[in-house]
Image (cartoon, rainbow, N blue to C red; front, side):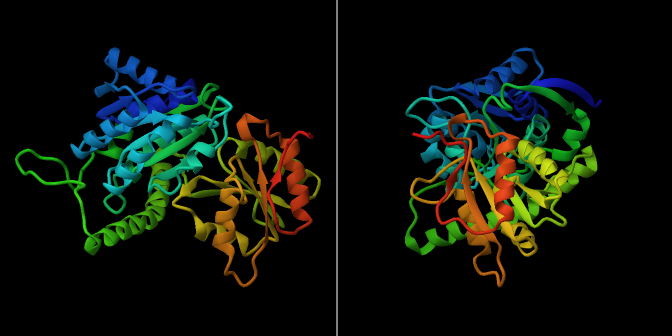
Length: 388
């Protein structure tokens, strides 16, 4: 039976793992993710979730345990934030290159020093080249829905790659909102059970992850690239199927008021909500600005970006992370996607919300007005930076 509950983003993540019937959960606390595994431990203790709940001594161990469990052919979930993700970094490569469909809930938090527990995307963007799929959510309903879809995407036979989905610290993780809880029977039918293409079997022993010569190594990595490309199609198919079953469809991107837009803002995560408000305000003033929300960062939705870029004059990107010495990473990816177009739009790079700095609709509205004036960025603009 479908119900409605008032829950935080962390609780929505825990419910998603429960409804997906994760068999193993490797748990280690880190602010602001801790509540996810705490809620799951309560589900297990209360008999609401049947899983092996493994308390480990570090985030590195959490991913190592997840890898071992996934090799066993079961459905695996874990969660982390910020320095926890950084501590996992070696194991992130291992999980992806071993083709293990682990799902992880990521709560975006700033990297130290100085120590900060508020949101930006430096932690997840820093893991962009590990081979993990990355999805970003705007609100708590998307948290729950994306967690459920993540298992179906990762476990698809054409993908077989791990996936983490990101929510902004405190803006979503600790803020309550009404969320539609889908019927468990429908979730079970939608997901089914994991059907591993390979697994550790004591009766049929095999070697996994052993040393490999240059004669074969490169082809295996190419296979990961092919699967990441296939993931674009699978993401779209799973998002459509989810909409057919639960009434809330998803894609790699979402366009908002882009049909006749002269300029388009690009946003990722919770800031997309404020960007919608800014777009509506600009539209009331007769200014044709739209919003492109990137839900999928890896795989990068270059085809969707190019289709939109072909009909607008300017794209203004709001990045909540900065690779020091370059433009915002998402802005750079959009520039790369558009570089060989015959007529490409001006692309502007804006760095926003670092360390949890507020990104208000009024600030975004100013960016929209600047975008209408055209011109590409030579250097990124830092939005909301205090004067020295």
